[in-house]
Image (cartoon, rainbow, N blue to C red; front, side, top):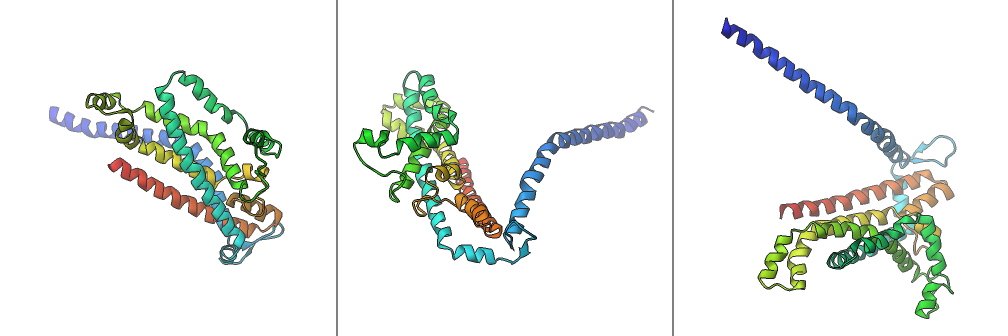
Length: 301
């Protein structure tokens, strides 16, 4: 009787456990479902719509007409598209690499100095300004009789010269994002194990030797993350060049995001604008994949 009772209790226990597990699974889907619905409504459906529109001809009036991949052939043959690609690529390099390096140097200096909270607040101060306000501030500084020319004693046409417009835009973006980059780098520097530096000091390592052989190798994931964030900001940059330079002079500061806007709403060619947007998405995914691959290699090391 005792054996039978034990045998009878086993399936009941399994059934109760399976009910608990299934209950946890259903409750988990309930909690996750709002995010999944938002992703479906605000990401997946628009993505499918943009891909479809990139294969059509549509001017915001009437019904889109399917035309295959001809939009892609036309934008690849358009010199303005490749000019926007070059500008976006230059912005990615000139914003991401200097931003990460300067943030890394500032993070080391702040970590070694005093009044770190005060310095961090000063660095984060540009983030308080909305993008439009920041553009207006720098536009006043870039004028012929503005602060920059007065301080430097020059007469540089910062935003009206094709050779200075892009560096001026990069300068403004570095000022805007440097505080955010520095706080991330500072968090990484402060998270480094102190015992490694103590051991290096006992072995007679100097200040720069510690940075070369301890800080930089351990900070590589943070630096790569900053590069990824800076590249993402450059690939999607629109408001600042649109307000500061309007994409000019000529095409010297016209980014891919701005070209998408102009093609869609100035030339009312939604098909080509969608094709440029899909191309930009593919480029962003390729760059992100390469960076994630570097991240994985760093983890393996």
